[in-house]
Each structure stands twice: as C-alpha cells, then as structure tokens.
Length: 465
Image (cartoon, rainbow, N blue to C red; front, side, top):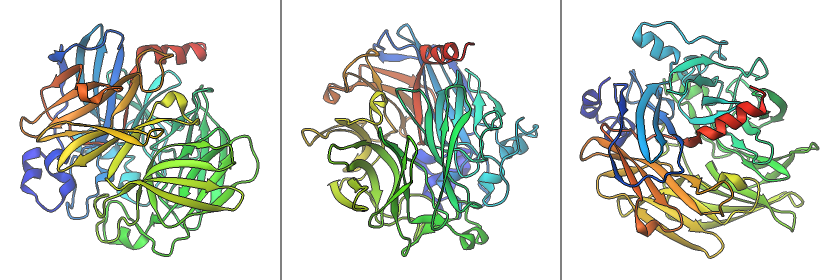
C-alpha cells in the first residue's frame, strides 16, 4: 500500500497523516545539516515503528501491529554520514516481496497475525555486541546488520522460552537486560534476564489472572516490577478480525507485581484500575515503599480497538507499599504525555529529570520535567511538525544527569520530509544545536536508542570477541 493509497482511506487515523506508511527503502549519504553537530557524537540514532505493507482491513488495523521499519542516521566527526530505512524482514514482508523467510528458529504459532508472521516493530537495542530489533507477545527478536539489514531471528542461543519483550531495561551495573514476556497462550508472565553474552540466565514465571498486555516494566535496586493490568487478550475480538485482540477489563483485579531481583517470594500489591504502557522509572524509598512514575490511562480499548487514542492519559506517581500491599496514586500532570525517557545510566536509582512527548494546544511538544523542583520546560517543534520519543545522550560518560543532548526524529507534514533534532537537555528554550535533514518522511513510530560505536565495541570486548 502506497502513501497515496493510504491518504485516500479515512477509516483509520493510524494509517493517515504523520502515521501513514511509506513504501520505499532508501539510503542517503552526507545529509545536510543546519547548525553544528557535537563533535563527540560517534554512532547511530536508531528508531523503529509500524509501517504496514498491506493492511488487509483498515477498519480493524491496529497501530501496534504494522510491519516494522527501522530508521537510522550515522553520525561521526560532526557529520551525518548516512540515513537508511529498512523493513524488518518478517514473514509477511517476505511474502510481499516474493523472498524466502528470514532464517532462524520458528516463532510461537496461533493467535493474531502479527505473532504468526513474527512482526518486529517496537524497539532497537545494542546487546552482546549486536544490534537487535525487539517486539513482544510471542514474537522473536531479529538481529540487524550495522547497515540495518535483517540477518536472522533469534531465541538467544536456545535459552528463550519463546517470547521476549518489546521494552527491556538495562541494569547499568551489570549490563544485563531485564524484561517481562507474555503470550496469549500462557497463563503467566515471564520475568527474564538476558546476560551480557546474549543468553537468558534467569526466568521467573508469575501466574496472572487473565492474559494481560505487559509492554513495559521497571527496575529498582530491589525489584523488577510489572503491572498485571486491565488490557487483556480477547478471543472474541480475534474472531471479529481485529489485528490487536486486546480490550479493557472493567472487572480485572489490577495489581503491581514486585519480583525480588536477588530471589525470594513474589509480592503483589493492589492498585486501582489503570493501564500503564510506559514507565519512566522507579526507585526504592528509604521507608520501604517503591516510587514509580508512568504514563497512565483510566480507560483504553473499550470502543476503539485501532490504537491508544480512546481517552487522554495523565502522568501518575504510584507509591507501592510491599508491606501493606496497597498503592497510593497521585496525578502529577493531567496534560497527556507519552514515550517517557530518562538518563539510562541511573536506571534503578532515584532520578530527577524525565523527558516526554506531548501535544500543547495542538502543537507537538517535548517536555522536560524536574521532579525535585516540580517544574517543567517545553519545546514546540512547530506547525505541521511531529516529534517522537526523545533519547537522552550524556555529554560525556561521567556527565551529570541532564548534562547532555536530547535527540529525536521529527516528521514534517508540510514538506513530507523529516529531521533529526539535537537539543541541549539543560536548556530546551535555546533550541536545536543541530538539525539533520532527511529527504523523505519518517512515520511516527515507537522506540529507539542512540547507539555509540564504542558501546558495541565494549560489549564485544567483554565477550572476548
């Protein structure tokens, strides 16, 4: 389906405007730059999102299920050396192109089509010296080349139980990835730890009430945490043809699940009915409680099963008490904001700053929140321009929190082009220090990372490669 085809179809907002897919893979060298790229940046800014090759029924298409497309800009020596976009080669993409399926183990079968076709569209991570595209719900990871070509599906050398996560978190001390895995055929959620050699070293299966979506999780020094929440799998929606057969459960007994990282009994804590797809972070408080901040919704997927647009969300603080098994909820901001990021170097510890994507009076906006001073700053991308998840990049490896750059992709619907914008994190009002110009549109997508070349080299060295 071409962009022109999609723009004629007004049945699904997630196939239109800044979400509309593009149909070409391109490579562009020596990108034009306005401003000056910081000289110390040496690596790739990668992101991934849905880019459906052929949604059979736009009425039932869900944004979460589109074929994955990776976008990347390579930066070195103050130059933007290249831009590439490539489909992640799932089974549907292979069929569409008349090509062989990607090599590797067989994914879990049954359920929704995006699981059967192993559609990978959710996150990009460097790990064990490789570049990975990740998804969830029974979809296997895909290893990518440096130039973003799909190489192979993986079950982490046979150690994966069949399902990984679309949103892992790295422990800064160990370098391991922690994530929560789910699958519609399971009656549990699996907490899994991926070691620095690229093998699962720990799996804890936690029984759950239904078959919930568990997209994100949080780490503290004591716990790995997920929400056993109200958006859960529905056989009825699958029979009706919905691409993402999950719906809101008004009677679902929502709870936080705290898994001790050093072993011990799993703790469950009651919480009122919220859906929290993305968590900024969490930390242990001196009083024994856990503070967790996340983008929260009091209702989703009740009447609209095409994407997360049914009700605006809020930014919530959850104070989780493992002793009383109760949760105190505070709404920090009722301005809808999503795709939270923080300084990943302090994952598991108390943080001061968070960075969010939002809309402010119709304009796409980047928010920086200072939780110590209870203040926020904003930067608007401008009319017709839509920013995506902003990644924090420290100025130096030992720089202070918030001392660095916020890097994000911005799609421009006026010109059908895109930019990579580099902003000083400590002073959003100063505007970009550099804007890298991409000569075609980048659809609004999900997650990504800044991957310094030095990080991959360090990972390979740690593995003895």
